[in-house]
Image (cartoon, rainbow, N blue to C red; front, side):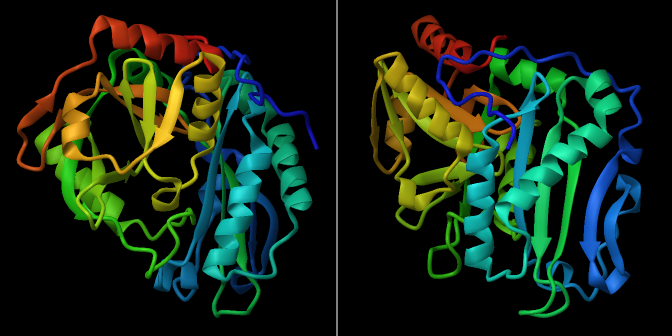
Length: 317
């Protein structure tokens, strides 16, 4: 397995510029689908999921989204472990072992080396479905995806609007919140609601007790001085970036704890933090309730300084 970047909280990577001239649609993806008699490399534009695949019919799709920094996949071991756990929760069997998937990632980067040169950094997406029936041969794909460098830089430096929506996170009785899946109607509706309030906003899901969990693109946490409060681990996706942020907090002597994140806490906090694969660590420039009322504005200078210190532990801006 290739060496892992980002495993130390002191690691620092530079993000490159976005180059739209590269022909991303024709990069080589790996696709295994018995219904299509396909098992190998083909242009990304030719990926086709059959309509009778359970990934389409019932939305049963395990997914893992990774990204590179300076051309190296960030914390791939952690991502592959989470993907393995998701497949277990989704009861998708017959997939290659993690070591084989790890090798496929390396081969994808080799086959698409010209794309990495032109873009510098890319996303890496791995997904799997049960295939046509439970217990049959799974369908799976590995492909690259674009990272909008301008949007990433804007979020890190200027923040992003956040809306606390009325969309409730499905309970553990439905499926584990530790599974990263493409059954994402709740996230979609939350983001549609958020977009109707503030263009470009991300929508945060409500829990059954009225507290707040996560958005479609980020785990969230609250900054109080030099204390960082995360949502309870049992209630949210185990974010790979969030795990690194917790390491960064220890590195900077910031205290951490877990607690349900209430509306009152969000209003009282010095900042609402967001953590996700594409952007890394950023913050809410404004937080609105479901009716659009402004609950809090951008962080003050003191909070921004703490956030900047956290960002520079693992991303050089």
